[in-house]
Image 1 (cartoon, one colour):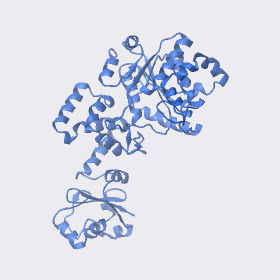
Image 2 (tube, one colour):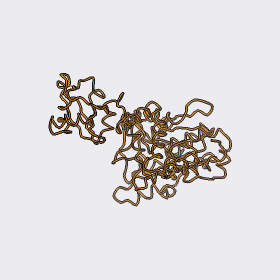
Image 3 (spheres, rainbow, N blue to C red):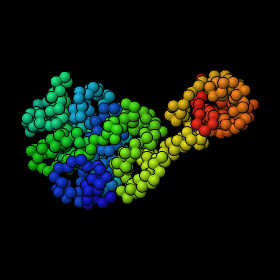
Length: 427
């Protein structure tokens, strides 16, 4: 991606919502070497897919020759941004913030490179905010803002109109903290651009105003759209739960399946937003998808691209192998967690450890699973060639299963016919 026309390219991908002073910003971006920052408040020990768009924007700017600055909000995370919220966030302890900031910083390293001529920079706003006394804050930052200016911001005004919750002085101050971050990065890292979600417009423009008043300098803001699905659900949620980037919170298989389940109405837009595919390639993918939507070609491409980016090539390969297991593919090298994820919706049953150690006869296994009502029925199913253990046909009714026949540490997969699966766990 070339730096010239970068905003135009981002707009064609649907990434841009608003920009300030477009003409001057285009001129700034025409030459490589500009700096842009995005802030991430460490309110949890992992990012979720809702954070991916800002992270990818930093990556796109870096690919265009500019320097991304990742700001981890060790200070602002202690307060919580009122933008887009109806009530105050639960305040975190200093130890929780520090732990979360370290984890979030490591995850952001998947999206931007901290090496090379335009290496990304990671900063923590607690480093310059914590040492300032309250009196210094009022003198050096607060004096540049009128209460009228702050109350006029949509994020504040909406909360003031909510008689039940209102807005605390703590959250009311958040705008000034973020504005001061922009000023600090302008002073110390020559950063004149900030990007954020459309709900950050008020905070971003407050920073631009502070730089203008305190330094007589020019700064710019870029916002991207806040995403919802075509069904109106908040993007990044699945059955009420966030889709996390940390594999310990959301397994790579669950992560992959989230994108596979993308609605046809959303998939083209998400390919443009969350992958680095060129628009003509996306157009070709969508043409193939339209020809055979039941094959979910576009969703598979989306899932592959994003899972590779977040979890790496090896995890993607394992996830795709796991996905094949649900359709009769080879089951090998999978873990208990993999099998739990893959077969989360199938009937499960217990196998006593001593029975598997002695050798469990295959008809007994079918009866125990509920796949057959009697050993006789089980034997007939086996003789008919319709029984599979770990997706391998079991043709001998006299066969016994031992621990070495398990698919993972403690589990095996029983299948009768093409679609009737049962998950057994040794207990």
